[in-house]
Image (cartoon, rainbow, N blue to C red; front, side, top):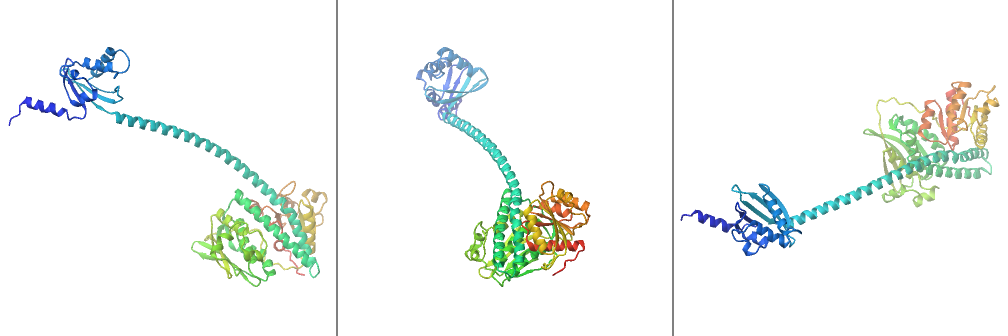
Length: 539
């Protein structure tokens, strides 16, 4: 079968009705040559305008009069529409019909001057784009609102942070004053009580004196704990790790706690070590102090407490082991909580249950590891892991730890300087009872004005840190310049900061913290006497 050109044209025209877009072809005179069914449906044209030969102007005029091109003169609107379609070789336009549809028109000029117009219903697409645009605008508006809100919140946070920093600064200054002013009268009371205890031995007042001492110790422990917690929480305690000999820490522990252990008939064993560690001397010392204090406090009479170090890889494990009451795993979280104590422990010893809370805070601040192993009724092991140092020369601590003190007579000349009269009187009474020749002064001016050092050369000086007109460190330097450069001295202070201790150590000055513990004071005095070449005679 042979198809002619007319057959092909007829087939093409028939196929046009199946195209989803409207399609129309106009000749060079802009008269309709052919259109498909979709063209007629979308434009809703009357039959006479869909016939071949219909003028494009007549079609446009009909649509204009129907309102498809908007308001205005129909003829003018029709001409403007035709100009839009024919002005360029190809055009793409959108327009909305009177029925609310959105049509997208594509027009192209033919080589002979004719015009091809195709169009489709894009109402759904346009609505989707409009919705997307509205969504984007809404999102941008919400982002803008959230950004403004976030900016405001950040501004308020900055203000709040500034206020918090100022409050912390004020709190730090308050704590510094509190640690001095609150502990000063307690220091004097402890010194008076120590003298009373020694003089009341073998008398009816001995038990009363010991009860007073126990009450003052409880007050001191509570105040020190609360001050430590406040310092940690306010950020006033700044870790300053440095190379140190662990043996110095153990010696101080032995000097401080051997008398208490002996009093409770508890065997306190300190294992010597050559370990060098990287640690903050003051803060780690506070951790060990709390752990050993707890071990002795909660170990029954006749029990044992062991303190020593074991090498574990690149760390040293500092163990505090006791044969005390212990606790089970379910109680472990409870023992570290503030103001929380186990029932059996509360029956054994007084306190607020702050010791292990402080330990946990300090361990966190120092970024160390604390390991706990305890069996109820058998004892506990608290292990603090410290970074090990190898082949490092470590400067020894200037505060002189000595062996356990013999309570004999001290044949020493001691100069005491403090801006509190009550403390001077209490210190003088205690030192005189120990056999010392004591002179006291409130300031350097009083020493100079009353010529206290004429014909009298002290073996050592005990100097308060907070004096009215100068610091105790500067006062010691003045005395050494005027009396002798090798004058042994100890700084007696309620300031437990690492900065003060470091300044004292740099000048070769020992440190005794307030409230003064008689055993620690006597140990320091004995060490300073040995430093000066004076012997301490036991009575």
